[in-house]
Amino acid sequence: MTPYEILEEMRGLAQKDPALRERLIATHESADPVDAFCRECQAQGFELYPMELIEAGEEAYAAYRRSTNGGGENAPKLYGQDDFYEMFIVTLKQM
Image (cartoon, rainbow, N blue to C red; front, side, top):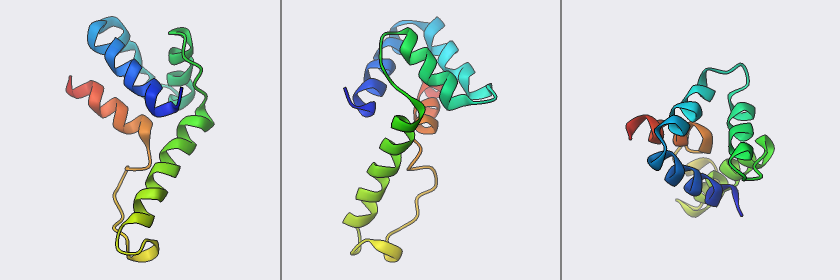
């Protein structure tokens, strides 16, 4: 599974299980939030590691930037769009 697919599965589980949702949101307060989040994913049976999650966000954002206005410096800078973890936590908080 790709990190994006794992996040989609985790989102579905969090919708069904409020306790899991709260544990995932609580990772945001950890000293190392991404690591704590990945450990929670692993406890749910998904192999997700911090560098995989970070790299997936950066790769997706780089592909987006390349696809707009010829890519490079002319592409719009979107705050936080390269951070799948932060976007996931925002989604959970809005549930």
